[in-house]
Image 1: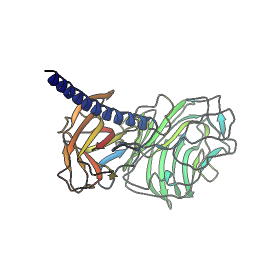
Image 2: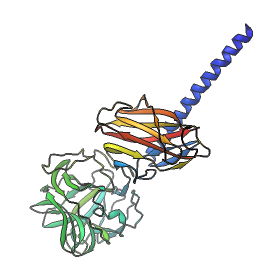
Image 3: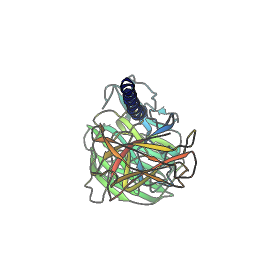
Image 4: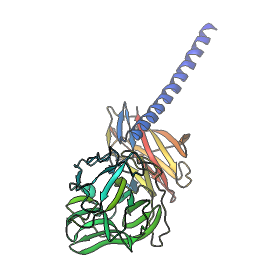
Length: 409
């Protein structure tokens, strides 16, 4: 009897250890995801695994994926914060080009939308410059998504005032400006030929206003204080080589008279905008300063298109896996049924063969965001250590995939 009791207790300990080990593995994945999201990391390796957070394209096999739109870190993020009359500022985005204050451009603590100050332009020769970079090639890819947004407070509305200009030469530029009497112009030209043009939303007062110029593939919209005011559709592309100007055209004319704050350029559809010809779309205006290198709407998220197919890059395991576990951090846009509207599969041979993972809804991780997880034996695949995962959505259901954790043994 004593021996039987001892064996029974040993059995309980072994089961409990297995549960604890499984729970610990899942918690490590969740904690790694939280760390990456908060610190704007993309892919992080764990012991026998990795966590993938969708801040940019790192970790994604973009050539094999379809109907996916990446959230993105800001390439330019100027908070406009600093001491009064300062003539330098840090870019909290990823672009490393030097920012030069020209004329009497300076920080001004007397006016700000968020934080202690904003950038002041006096309309008579003030502007900022940043060297040429592919980070300013907003019109180079017809399928790419981009967002330019900022706050502006005009001192007056006389004539033409430029917010941005990627200026190569006269008739070779893209620009974002305000024209007295017509409103905000978002425009690209090459050799004098218009490639994209949309106008609307005139500012007639001296209050702070939020402006967003959004490119969703080949559709363009400008939003004033959250309301769509113009639209254009164009698959034309143009790639300029020139300095980025903030506050003037680029050839010494059309200076801005006023203040700008929270200036941001992101290679992503930050606000989930859907610009349309009827101009019925709207976006949520930010109610605080932008967070460094993250997007305001959805945070470090990956927004899928209809019937998405998301394929990871190949990750090398130290040994040949026999079982692979996937943990998905998912947020419903439409209501999704697990294993019907969203599916997962894994590979250990670099995508030559795939094994379906049966997912289980493990409950909410955060508000409206849940954990889906499951594991699958991959012993039926060719022996290999090149691990990949694949996530698909079906039945025209949309969701936000915030991150994926993969582990194996």
